[in-house]
Image 1 (tube, one colour):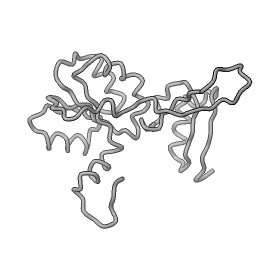
Image 2 (cartoon, helix red, strand yellow; image 1 turned 90 degrees about the vertical axis):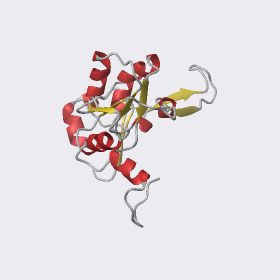
Image 3 (cartoon, one colour; image 1 turned 180 degrees about the vertical axis):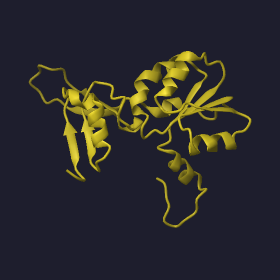
Image 4 (cartoon, one colour; image 1 turned 45 degrees about the vertical axis):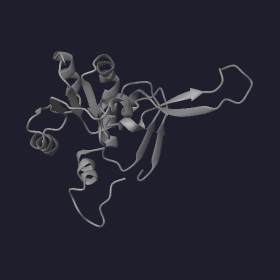
Length: 182
């Protein structure tokens, strides 16, 4: 299959396998996976994780209307303006270098990957305003694990742009008539 929308319903255990993750990353398909499982090995956008609400209870002989809603409302983590004293960046390369260079007065560290952010939060007591920066396009699989840290710690802030490239385009640093960012 190529350039196809693939629906995978709940109950398919293979969606948690590394083989499945490896294979779908090689395709140009769009996958809609209905599951209650955490899919840590897949890069999932925070903005593309939904829950389903029903307007009626089961067992009633009446129309039932379903509504999709974002499980993680990223906007609730973005309280502006903030003045972080510390930055934790998921990226080890250009994203980390950029944030370390533009904020020399703020302690900046790399998490060495999105899945390590949870470990950093678990190991360290956060006592100063800390901004975590990660690619929102792939951070969805981590949100369930780290959301409790944000609920219980007023010093934590989260910035999840779609990608580092999106940040550059949005900032207007790169000029060009064919470049735009929605």
